[in-house]
Image (cartoon, rainbow, N blue to C red; front, side):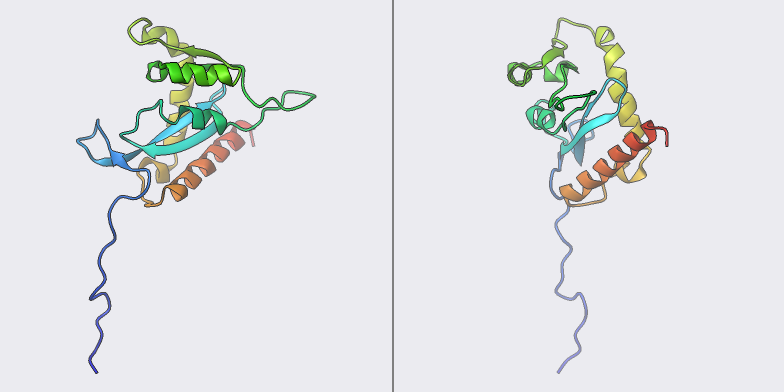
Length: 168
């Protein structure tokens, strides 16, 4: 009988995890991208996590479908919002068709035609919400390997932002 050393045959797990891809703007380091839909005041309505090398327009339909029902006064809750503002990254036929199929008016900036100044009055709301998410230190650097845990932290942060918007 010999002594058994702990960790002798154990190896470190594979680095990375789910929803991770090489970031094209950061020397190919692995990273994730947060996708977000807000209302006109910057309150997050839906959040998703994806790999950094995935184009913004790929999870577009999934993000729109993640928006919960909206209630404005009496009657049945409306399932979708009426108008969607998006930047030039979503200027594809499939994104416009996704809005049309869901009965929404799409206001997507066109590549090569419209300047960023015209969309800036709507875009800064989303950028401010991303800045609110950066106040949660756990989200600035992704420490979790599992994408569902990181998404859970992202949703907790979104709920705290909504809670603080109520003024409590």
